[in-house]
Image (tube, rainbow, N blue to C red):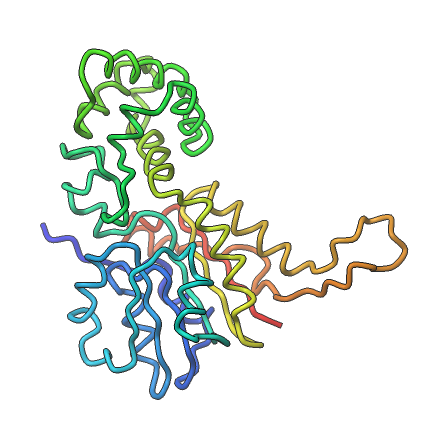
Length: 310
């Protein structure tokens, strides 16, 4: 059965961006261009800057954005380097930015990329295949303590000590080369009740290793620090996250920009002079409807946060 890509929280993103036909917009996570196609179709004299770490996404963009490429600029890069990517091209005063965090559908759906624990493939997990660090290196060369740390910190995996120890024992015999070999190691450490849980036993570990390979959380923080200052007054920022680690970074960064003053609470007057830069619209994250989750199970854990530049 052919998988049909459904962009997550599409209508909510379009409403959040409040697209102006003559505006300048950034889709910092092009992927299969589902969001980009809808944004650019609403532009007349405006333009859309599409960024992706994965060259495959950019190579496919001309087909997916056919008829609109005169309004599109494609950039191969990491959205964590947003400041440099925009500044190098003289792009400032953006009217809206969208970031759909985490692994993209094409990467998950291509077994050879090594993101999936359901298919056998080389341990890769790179979003940008020109980068040097792979999951193979993380699994076979990082220390037991570092493996334990990322499994716990990035995967919130309660069996992190046991899994990291098992990985080190197995690789001492021979390198762990494929995704299903890694799944086998993870399974071997877990008690029977954990294996009976609805969630796949390797899900948290694969998430952790993927985040480490791509330095995802640091990139999210750098992106947010760069995005808000580059929004025009009234410009909108939309960020979709899929797990608590990402969402915590987004929530805290936006709250900081919305607060402004950083003086201690016991100061009688503000001396830092910092003013709120954004308004959260709304204050709470926007969640997918039951109908969307039924149509697109990948939307289940999505949270959309929207902010407007003051």
